[in-house]
Length: 72
Image 1 (cartoon, one colour):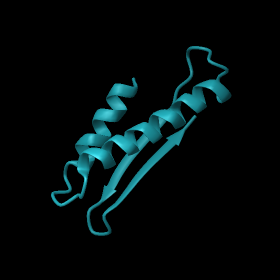
Image 2 (cartoon, helix red, strand yellow):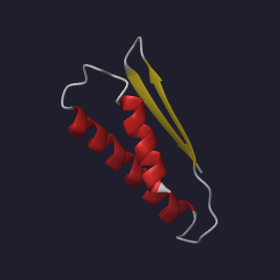
Image 3 (cartoon, one colour):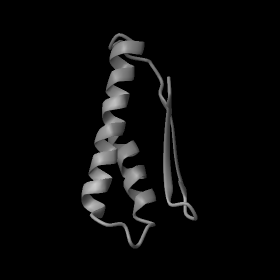
Image 4 (tube, helix red, strand yellow):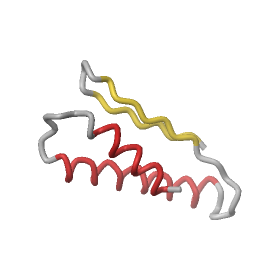
C-alpha cells in the first residue's frame, strides 16, 4: 500500500502553494517514508505477511511543518 501512502503525502504537501522545488521535495519525502516502511517490514516482521504499519501524516500550516509518524 505504499502507493496510497505516497499519494497522501503528495496531497498534503500540495496544499502548500509556495513550496520551492515541490516535485523534488515531495519525491524525497515519499522515498524516505517508503524506505522506513521497507525497513519495518524487513526488520520488525522478517518479511512475513500480515504485519501492519500505522501511518500518520500531518501538516501544520502555521509552522509549515510536515510530520510523518510510522508505527509497527
